[in-house]
Amino acid sequence: MYEAFYPELFLSLAVLVLVIYGVYQPTLKTAIIVLLITGLIALPNEQFLFWEDKTLDLTNGLLTINSWISITKLIIIVGSISILLMLKDTKISGQASFDSPVLILIVTLGSVLLVSSINWLSVYLAIELQTLSLFVLTALKRDSAYGAEAGLKYFVLGALSSGLFLFGCALLYGLTGETSVHAGGQICALTSNGEVGKILITISLLFKLSAAPFHMWAPDVYEGAPTTTTALLAIVPKVSVFAILVQIGPVVNVLLASAILSMIYGAIGALNQTKIKRLIAYSGIGHIGFVLFGVSIGSFESIQASLIYMIIYVIMSICSFSIILTLGLSKNLIVEFSGLSRRHPIMAVTLALTFLSIAGIPPLAGFFSKWLVLLCGISSQYYLTSIVAVLSSVIAGVYYVRIVKIIYFQAESSLLIWKDVLIGDKRGEFRRSILIGLSLYIILFIMISPNLLLQIAHDATMGLY
Image 1: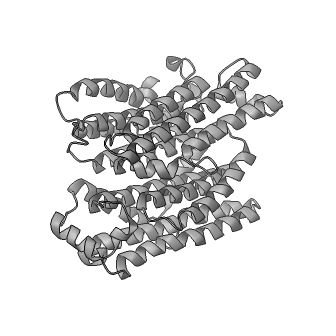
Image 2: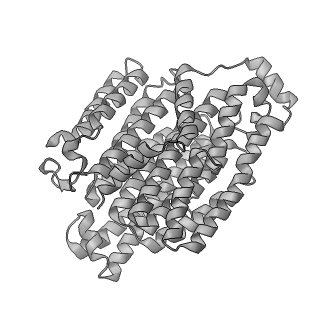
Image 3: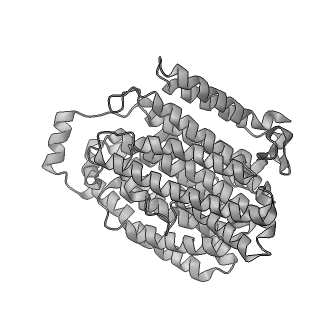
């Protein structure tokens, strides 16, 4: 009965042990092993895959398990393992890098607990566990002004969103007298105060997803944070917040407005960017718009499409960040990709295909996920929003194709050539190469045989009904 929560228990104990172990030994390889074991424990089995939202006595009504929770946990764990594989066994800012893997494990633990939560108290505590670790990881580059700015912005706006969340919870608790998520959902339809509480909670979660108009922190934080932290921010917290947002049954009008704004702002905001991480931040805002569009439609098929979109978005993010880290860009400028097709032909093809997939060019994975969401939008008669989504994708396609043009058709500047001569040619590491290879394989071939992905998403969405 309690084996549903073995992953959380094991991960909690492992984090406590690694905090002490890390003082004496590097923790990166141990952290990867810990997450692999957690993933194996978390593999859904028949006993609780279609368990109908039974709250277990062990957690006193704070956590639950069903197929949606079980599968999103696995996505989070796979994403976290990918982030750890991107890390190097080197020192960061003169400090031993043991704190980085441990903090990533704490973010994973917070995300896994957040997905399982069924009570406003456990939701809030899980969000804070996740966010506080991300504050530290964001400001890890202590000698960088950009790093300090990123840490401070994320901290202040994270505190603001936590305040909104607690205020919303207080309104719902005042009405219902209990902190259960489902009780709040039932009452909010009856009174305006309940609706206000639900809106505040939804806005707080949209902050965490960096959805417009609550996206203002994302470009600066992505740019100032170390690249592995940026990858973590783009993948793990978004999956967990998306999963809980679907479960609490958010206010549809707020979500739909945010989805439309996110798609427009994500497309237009990235057009004049010169730095790759800022471009990825705006790109992420646009993708979250598509995901929220699926959630706001609210049908079984649309939530399934949103989950598939999220999975493919995670895979594409892993691939693009692995390549950016392997190339070792000094200033993270887009122009640094020029001449890549002559220096690293295979890496150039991989990066070009990844960005074309993110743009939604058929027959790559990105097109498949956008097509599913738009199909649900059209079949549910959201015609205007679907037109906005298509136009946003066309505009967004411009800056992805521009990167492909820089990779293949732009002459390398003499400054960049001298930099390569002085630094020497950096070959990709084995771990990152595996990540790039696996994620590219999925991006290329998921369209040919999407049955496994569709089945996983279907099984997960069954847990919500």
